[in-house]
Image (cartoon, rainbow, N blue to C red; front, side, top):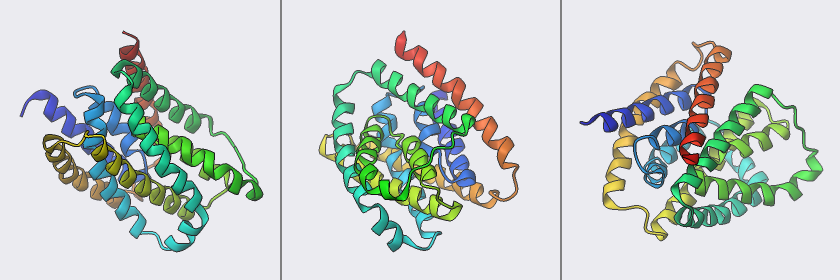
Amino acid sequence: MGVPAGLSLLAVLLASYVKGVIGFGFPTIATPLLALFVDLRTAIVVLIFPNILMDGIQVLRKPGLVRTLRRHWILYLFGIGGTFVGTQLLVWISSPRLLLILGAVVLLFVVVNVGRFSLRVRPDLERYLSPPVGLLCGVLGGVTNVPGTPLAIYFYALGMGKDEFIRSIAFSFLVYKVAQLASVIYFGLLTWRVFGLSVLATVVGLGAFWLGLKTQDRVDQVTFNRVVLGFLALLAVWLVMRGLS
């Protein structure tokens, strides 16, 4: 195994462990890390299968799925449409621009978490905001593989409790990733070689994900999050620099 392949597997391990511990962050961490060693389009497609499986496990661990589906079905519907639009943009947009977009998304993720913005959305506005938020998240997910930042902001602004937040965001990711899988197949981005790499990433990632779930209640969450955010900030700056070079 070459150095790039070994480092790519380490990236998947790290991202899977973080997702197991904090409940999200797999594509946010794994996509830019993997993009340091392989083409960004390849990185996005490779990470779809492990993401679907881990999100599925998270969804099954939280009850109340029917209630979540009834509440967010409009968000999911527009997200599916946005995912196909985003995947088409992924085919059209040049790699340097994709890197710039991805770097900007990761920086936004860091700023939102460090700043701890107290955004709030009135319940009566949810029906009007769900379509544009769903579309935005779908497009962003299709282009960068990171739809979680606007979703996390939106769900937090709705004032959700911890369990409802985790269930809603995991179910959203699952819907978006299944739509993304269909879209990359449609646009011819999922080759047999990439499929094999995705299966390998899934097998490797599940072990780290399981370990993350086991250690979820044993770590200092605040310290751990600060380390992850600091690392993401440095990585985002590096991606932006690569995109501008």
